[in-house]
Amino acid sequence: MSEPFDAVDVITHKRDRHELADDEIRWVVDAYTRGAVADEQMSALAMAVLLNGMTRREISTWTTAMIASGERMDFSALSRPTADKHSTGGVGDKITLPLAPLVAVFGVAVPQLSGRGLGHTGGTLDKLESIAGWQASLSGDAMLRQLDDVGAVVCAAGSGLAPADKKLYALRDVTGTVEAIPLIASSIMSKKIAEGTGALVLDVKVGSGAFMKTQEDATELARTMVDLGTDAGVTTVALLTDMSTPLGLTAGNALEVRESVEVLAGGGPPDVVELTVRLAEEMLEAAGRGGQDVAAALADGRAMDVWRRMVAAQGGDPDAALPTAKHTDDVLAPADGVITSMDAYAVGVAAWRLGAGRARKEDPVQAGAGVELHVKPGASVRAGERMMTLHTDTPDRFERARAALEGAVFVAPEGSRPVLGPVVIDRIGGADAGR
Ligand code: URA
Image 1: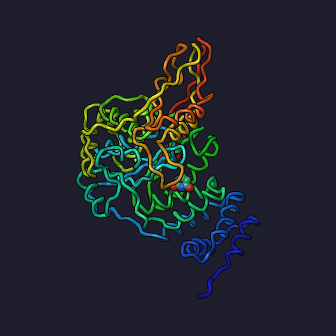
Image 2 (image 1 turned 90 degrees about the horizontal axis):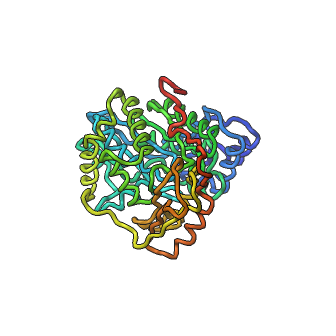
Image 3 (image 1 turned 180 degrees about the vertical axis):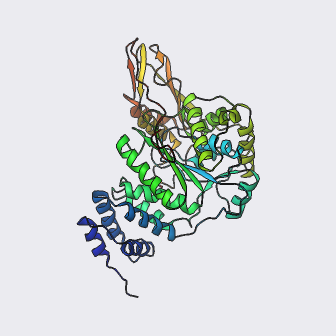
């Protein structure tokens, strides 16, 4: 069968800064998915998009074409509204774990399709898999039943959602084209729109531990995704949140589950609690159930009850002891003083090197590995005091983890006043944008 377009024409149009027509975009995404456009041609097009950008219409058509490459889920049979959250990924970002049950307390169902970690950021499924018996894979029917009974599901995305993205993402990963904002936005939003959620809150991370290192880039990504969601009929809001410092006091799978359970028990680090509550408020508002006292449901155990039912529904034992690493090693303060910064990227790389993350997608992860922080920016320390504990089953990894942490913590002389930024930097979309 002859093709209606020629891949080389599409590439040269974008290379020469022309706007691609809707038909061209629909064709190239579909033809690439079925193998009629070669990897090297799609690589060239992705690079042209990275260099020359795309208009709002082009990004919207590209996203719709990626959604059309696979199945769409449908939650319209549920008796409750749905809301989901997507984070662009960060170090110590365990927020989904307390957030999903917390939102479900208020009668909004949370269908969270998650992934595994790659590189220095952890994956939600890897974290939950450190709970004895917990299963990431669910059939569509089982997911719907759990959403009706419990109100929250965190499970693996099936291969049927946006297969064009799966293929393109793997190609971008090896061709230096991951960072193109139109491609990141369409990749994330094609999966979220195909997932069928009614409302979506995006947590767009900014800082050394995030994809987006500057507020300007993060704002552009957030704005692009909010527009895509809105155009597709999904109520979408984005928060720009700080990722210059790790979130909470742990980075690593079981360590992060432990911290999440502390939050669900009404305790936990203040930054994790603040972000969990703020995202829950945004999700409830976007789903039409705003104005609730969200923090109370953490304090009084209602969110913990849903968590226990959510874990048990997927075969997990919420009472089982979490795995711990066989070996630990402390990182000590070099001098007396005040911690003014702690680099999120360095802590993420250290956790990854300790075995919490994977270098290739088929690698196993160590459930107990990671970094535990005893102090955060703003704290005073004495020389020789413990700042971090490194955890691993394989102690030959300590040296490379320590190398990653070289220069990661800045200790200023006593009396210095660190400038600590807010957890939530900005808000984009919804009724009061820029609040
Ligand atoms: N996450 C995604 O799903 N896609 C991207 O392109 C980047 C992050």
